[in-house]
Image 1 (cartoon, one colour):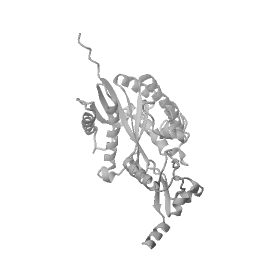
Image 2 (cartoon, one colour; image 1 turned 120 degrees about the vertical axis):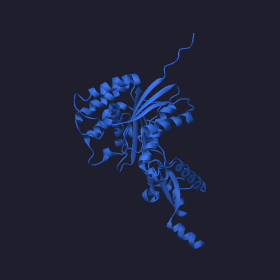
Image 3 (cartoon, one colour; image 1 turned 90 degrees about the horizontal axis):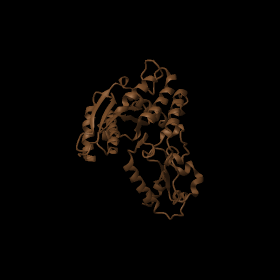
Image 4 (tube, one colour; image 1 turned 180 degrees about the vertical axis):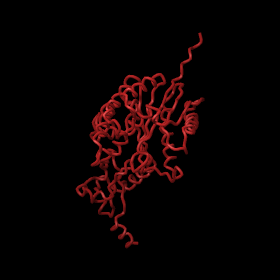
Length: 351
């Protein structure tokens, strides 16, 4: 008897961005996804959450704010009962070199981030499948059809697929797609927390409460650098850190590191500079040799340009000790040396 052919998986993906425009440190592009059979049920649940009101769900929306907690509860109900999943890409906008890599066009930069994000779905998919993508309209310059062609070409090249995984990709206006609206709300919450908008003096109590509700229901296990900073599971701050996709495949937060190559160079410089000293040398010894000690985080731009001026009591710290952790992201800083004015003057005099 002939082997029964498996039905290809039909996955629907809905995407929207947050904090792309304006002076935001972090841009977030997020998508929600589910199997085709679940789309009608999830749409029905999302529409029911409106309770007969006419509104389009937006993170920035202020119309009928009393309905938003119910929407959040509905989203996670759909996660638990209908397989709704969320994933997002977080980009530090201070590292986006649009002039160098995107023809000085931030919109082209966004298209590249969307491409990277959607390729994570392709890279995860091993069995036969077809993807159907709806993207919130961005600009007439860049269309979903072009994304589809680029995605299929990249997927064939990288994953050696012999057919077009992305069967369809269309641009939609968000008011026509409840699931694009869900992507907007969840992406907006991640952007709100990652950009630390809740710490502003004029922060909206409603938005903070909504982000707290999302963090609590997402219930992300705390790993890595977040754990080092004392972030607790279900806490608001948990939305600001990368997650482990193997542990939480239904709520993935991925931070794109655009300075990865620069970080390698900086770490190599640090290792070379500090190797000139014995392990029992202190930071004060470096300072006496005419160096200014810089401690820098290549991920979030937090840096101390003159470490001993800021923290003079750490002069006794050994060169061989581990660098201080970044107060923003929890990663260990990179220690490197700059010649001080005294050192330059002395060198010039000796010359």
